[in-house]
Length: 412
Image 1 (cartoon, helix red, strand yellow):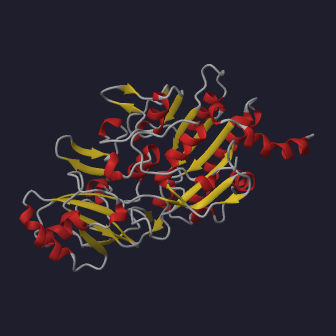
Image 2: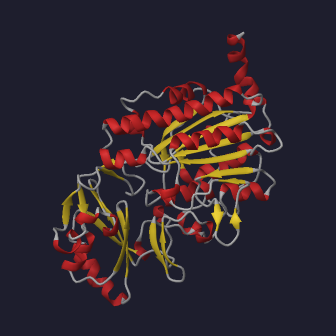
Image 3: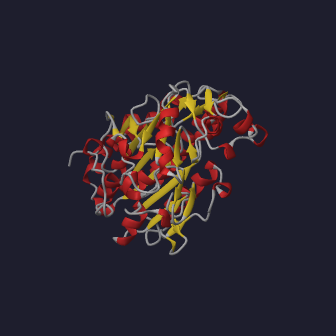
């Protein structure tokens, strides 16, 4: 009997109508393909056999969390959705700092907004843009965290997903979006090959396995699509760019906002930009790019939120705002060397341009509408939103820059 079910399962999946589907998207922060090596990941192994997958989910620049979580959720480039870094300056609103408030968007719609607008009940758990200060909750079910200190453990997040999947038909969301904090922290602070990272990866896989097991037991299991993805990969780092000291040494008067491996420099007197470019261009450890001269592939745009200059570090260097360093190191920003051995701050980072080896992430898909045993060469972060909408049988948000990833889908 078990063998018969396994034989019939792919046909049942292919016959499922999009209007009947429930789509579950699990986003694990910083799940780099490299950290799967040496870890036991039976849930992902099952999806490789029964679903479709790639280890080349291509993020957008800068390859950091809030930029890419917003790109995944909206299907828009940063130049259109407006979240251009984890920390930036808006001339009217002030400093953006890792906010999940949808009111920061300058355009585009989050997945849950587009779905709710079309009558699809949604849940957004820890998901970027799940609430608006001006309008309230933007999904039928939302988790109530308002900043990172409130987030539950990943095990608790898993049980939140389980409880929603087990709701009666009249209450259950058809689109369920959930954010998980690991394995990002473990990679950052203990290194990509550490025992702590291995345990974090295995815990993340166990969360996927728990949700797969619950889906298996549901009476509508053949109507569920599960997508497991991430916002970016990770690269080992050795040195931190002490940008505050670099600017001080060259008498560059700019407001610097840094995150990951990228910094925006905002000048009150744009007449000083030329001097800054001349001084900073001498450093081989990073690139300095004018707002108007950035590569088109970055898709940041030239709006006021983007700095007059963009400083982009090269591996194994990273850049982070001094305020985020441990308190006992902050004096180095004014009195220390320009480059610091990073072991006491971070051991891995991300934020480099998307063509940098290591910053790509994973994407695994399983269930209704997904082929079995298919490895996909790559998928762009910007394509996840329209692909999820296609699986649900709804239109993508307005506007949208991404395209449906047809190679990830089963042939009708």
